[in-house]
Length: 331
Image 1 (spheres, rainbow, N blue to C red):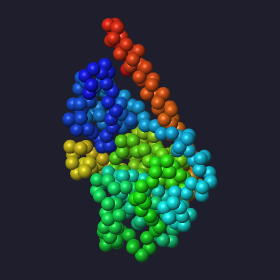
Image 2 (cartoon, rainbow, N blue to C red; image 1 turned 30 degrees about the vertical axis):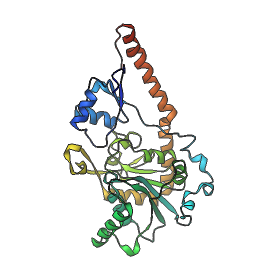
Image 3 (cartoon, rainbow, N blue to C red; image 1 turned 90 degrees about the vertical axis):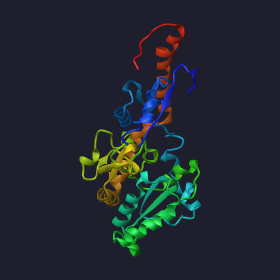
């Protein structure tokens, strides 16, 4: 931190239900005036970890909902086909599901694969496109092949009748990602934990119905942090998609010092995916509602919130301190 700074704001987030003591100490340092976190989940997790509540403020994440993440820009999908560029132009089925994440344990890729591959077979007119890239665990294809072998040996899946699935681990330009979303019918992100869950919000912006874990930061803009949608409806329905039940919490990365995260229910995930597939019009209508729900996180709206906060800080705290005046802050 620059010692000459008059006022310091830390932007932070964390995926599990607590932050480590060393991070708490940094947040509570006299050098940090405010800590901005993206979700109410993080307001609570930071506070329960020991961060002073007076320092915590919730400011969401933003994306360009009109010039980039806008389904109206892709009404003629054949003109923008990313699948065609990848050589997958003839792979789509009657209903197409996708997921997007960095390949790491926190994203719960094992639960995702088990749910999809054990619920559907080659007789179902469905295809799943898994867009990922190498993360902490190494090469996705190697790990996935090994895990599918384990599922087959346990007779959880049948190798000869697997449903359509494609792994996309090649890089796609960021400005082409919305076009890939536009080619899909649904989105799945059953993570153990999310600080925000940007791909799910991008999917909702593109009017895709989402199936997400009913826990953590992703609930802030989807199922509702305090709503617990998964407990109120057999399919966890909310405006924008479906909330996956949480079976239990477990130590993140098997290390309690890193906090706890959610274990999404594979049976409930399977139930939701089957329901989305068999009730495609309902899912499509939910997706349209989802876009309306997340429009308030257009980056221009989030920028206005940030500027408003900056103005409050300057007029109530920074300017009075430079003139020698004393003024209480409402922040």
